[in-house]
Image 1 (cartoon, rainbow, N blue to C red):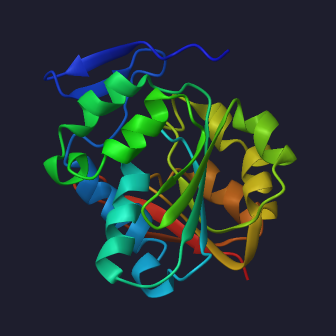
Image 2: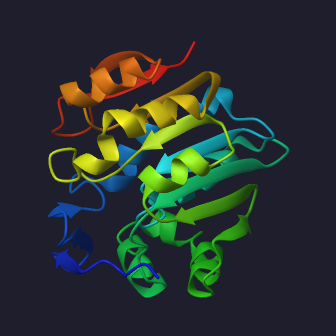
Image 3: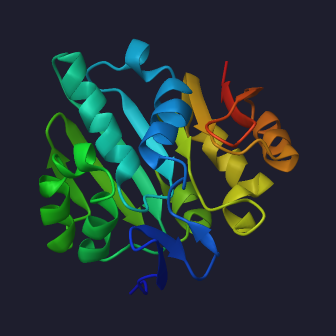
Length: 222
């Protein structure tokens, strides 16, 4: 059974992984970064529709999922999205809740997620979204996953501190599990990551990052 991560709490509200010495979300407004990098980077407001499938490396606090939930609700479109996330070190529900209190807008819609998570559900429904969180090492789990995503959120800890989640082999699996015309977005612009994604079949671009991060990466798979 996966062991929960050991955390340090910066300023009492921002969880930092002791194992990877990296925060779970940006110190410079994690919700704004999620919206800038993952939602806008994948052009979700223009692309979301019934059945659209998002996949993610690094579930963390569930912040990205809840940001998608809020976007989909605001769009008022009919139907249901699919969201699949891979997470090796799942947070306990109480620590997830503590982290999300940093974002009152998010915490206001988080109860269904927190209730499902506290009940150890890893497949559950949120308003407008069918969710599956696959617990385990993505290097083992993603090759066995039968799905294909139309948008990827690559949100592991920093490539310098968590290189396993950014390897060329794993990025190749991301490419293989991306639908034609699908996309990815990530906060990192590390050269090795961009080259691995290019080798995986993506057309990769570097764009302005969020806050103090000069650049981020995004791309599409023709």
